[in-house]
Length: 297
Image (cartoon, rainbow, N blue to C red; front, side, top):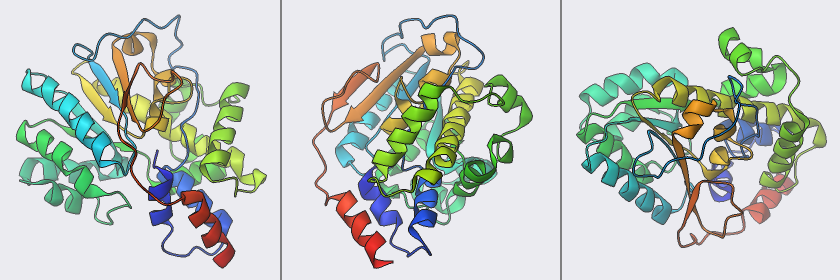
């Protein structure tokens, strides 16, 4: 989930209408992740193990905060230096770029080479902040996995439903053929409303909530596929909330071997296994900028 400041930067190119701009924002990850049922069904969640021994780490971020990136890298580097060799799954790469990402990881010597190959449009991310993480993966030959739906896929889900971007097996496994639970739908709509500074028409919220659910499901499925080896998911804090995000989609066995660590600028309300406070990044009021941009269209 991108921070509001990053969202503002993503709106530098004018859109035809505010509704289109906000749908694009949702598709590229500006809003919070969704609460969900786990798939397959869980009979209870075990207490997650400590960061030092967890087989699965979900590591959050405030996207534009350098201190959060540095703190997360230090945590991961300590595990890697101790001999752990996990898969590194990243929200910042779209799943259809996996082939390019594999080739880049095999041939590139630095992060910029990887980004040029696997995210040629640069995708609005502040890539220099991710360079040390990518280079840690290159140095230790840790597989890099693209963990996100593309903006176009998420937009199709918003308009047409889950079948527009998710395969039948995933839809069945995560029970997406059923109506979404009321708490999932209402929590997601509210997170999207707030994340878009209350500028969205109400008619857009259900589709955008569905797109965010699809993104969380895909990230959870990516984690599940690599959990046996060990995997780190790098994503915005909103995607990692226990009440709203990826952890709620994990089966009980995977969740029991997972530790979720958020790197936050303000006090947290217990939505993660662990929070690590970092200094706030100075930034202008993003909602004021979005409102100004909306008035100017």
